Length: 382
Ligand SMILES: NC(=O)c1ccc[n+]([C@@H]2O[C@H](COP(=O)([O-])OP(=O)(O)OC[C@H]3O[C@@H](n4cnc5c(N)ncnc54)[C@H](O)[C@@H]3O)[C@@H](O)[C@H]2O)c1
Image 1: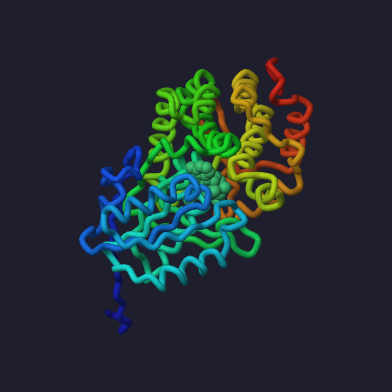
Image 2: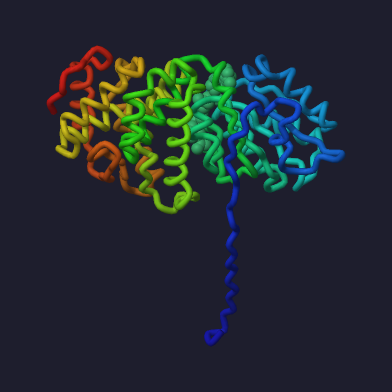
């Protein structure tokens, strides 16, 4: 006040707390989990359900709310990246606005894959400046990744997740049985994110994938080893997310596979799922790490062999050095001026690098093309 200028400082901390709970057979009438938050007596719920999930479980979901005398407005929403749009966001918001819910004790319920939970999370975060929401992931991508954190988003102006927010859910309910109807391609899509975690932070998870991954995929993760892999993946994901929930630290291990994939995914939206693009990025990054002498030939070969062993056939023909280089430039903006690319330096650990060149990307793609992933069993020499 000595110079006559008055200043007020506002400082406030908002705690973030939510539970991620295993809740098998969620739509059985006697299962209370879906209604474990919010008012039941005279209660209403705005529920958004993925179109395919609605085909399999729609009747049971409607019966569930009817049985509990909850007035539910069920909105069916088609999954797929092409539906993660501003129009879809506004469309659901119109429906929500026409179905009044209490601001605090009638949480929106999102039942679907990563597209749906990202869109509905953003709706929950922006409607009346934030109403509670519950996420029920129904894809493997959602189960181990999209639903466990607090990021929401929609695509905008040709960019993925360009609009979005950090919006903690009130609860995340995990019903592994829902994965049993998931097509194999979408199971593998989620597996790519598990591979990512294994490489950069969890060597034991990598071993489990080598040993039990193929069998768990065949069992749609309904088997005991599948359960172990999922539990380990979620725990690892949370270990990374929780201490850096709002991404104050922009060097994030979980960004492994999310640098070059970004451009590939946008350019080839009709051909590449998110996890498929991430895996292409992982393979190129792995070879860059190998060529730099960060990662041994043997660990590099194990990573590439795992991909084949799990029955994944990466679309390496879509790799494009200049597109991936542009993608890296875009990520530099996102990461506030530095590349901050996680690179494995052993199985289960990584370092961050800031000096990747376009030539390195180009020669790693070349090497990958020469090597032929699924068939190859020999040790690759960088
Ligand atoms: N918020 C985050 O932190 C985060 C993290 C990772 C990924 N994501 C986002 O997740 C999205 C991808 O998610 P996704 O792979 O779940 O895609 P998705 O939501 O489009 O679902 C994939 C397909 O599976 C179908 N489906 C869903 N559940 C099913 C079931 N149980 N049985 C049969 N079919 C079912 C859907 O209808 C859709 O056709 C991307 O947009 C990505 O950006 C977000």
